[in-house]
Length: 237
Length: 221
Image (cartoon, rainbow over all chains, first blue to last red; front, side, top):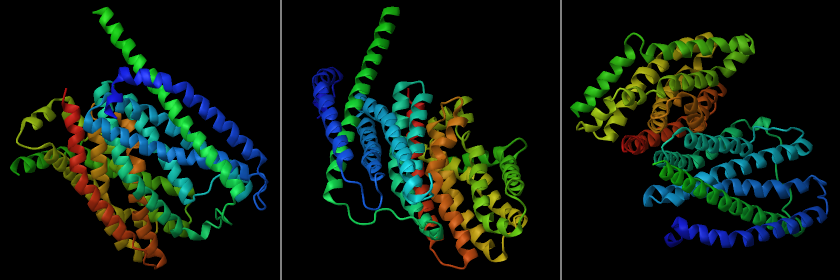
């Protein structure tokens, strides 16, 4: 695995991989969106059920993104590999984006279904906190000028966050059961039938691939930027 | 051990003397709590209901005031480099700093809280829950805050970034702390105080190691 972590080999490999990855993502999105729109309307949710197909995968990828970021941070911290730092750094804005997407589509779904854009429900609240964790991580990266230090500090923050995330999740769940009287809204209802499951899974695959496609693009840009800076420094010297 | 004690005493003295952070944090705590009735109205029943939460939120915010500069002043004037050369380990430095912070912020806030609770009309039954929860919970605030302070010590305008880093991590403390007070008000037993204690113990035990790692990376070149 670490053989490919050499930036030069990474650039070669990712350059070859990227068109395929992008094409597969596009095809999956086309198929997923087609199925999402041709699926029959839910007997309770009506057409709003279609929001689920773009909402749920976004939430999944948002959480996966934090896990990926923490894992890359750990590798960067332990193996001191700059490419892992680049991966963690570039995963954060994507994760924040998917978190925001999940929050926005969730509230758009909540309006017709729950009658409100926002509910202090356990999952909603912990996603809002996840967004803040992402933003804090990005802000820390941007605030420290020295790249090596910034990478290490951000990695420590990501790991503290990943240890704390289950506790935050638990405390928020605990808190909503404490306020049980207010949360009359329940998600779910009957178990999902196959007509809805297929578009959901295909969209999940599409979102996941989109995350990694964009991640590769961002990582390549970052590596090229670093090379450019190094060249500029060498030219000035 | 002697070095640790010396650092602790020095930091407590610095915070306690004129212009130090201890009195300012207390004043801030009182000012925020005083503002709340102006914002939400003076209805005694409503105030009694929200008193625990308001005091907890204000206490956490007041804690942040002194936290972001916990290591920064020493980093800027070079004392931190000298501390690094001393027999103290980085873990020891973090422990001393975080303990000094709690002694000069968390503890005084806890002592002041009943007076402010009186202003907010908190029913007498909930006072023990308030004091005990603050006593147990504020060390966790100092611990998590000192980690973030160590991470941001080289950032010049770190004070702006600091709350964004720390507040999401502190939500469990606020939830369990305020939850313990609310449970007492409602006369139910929900275990909030034990969850708070567990969180606090874990935070206090882990923070020195994470803080030390953060100090190490900031002092290495």
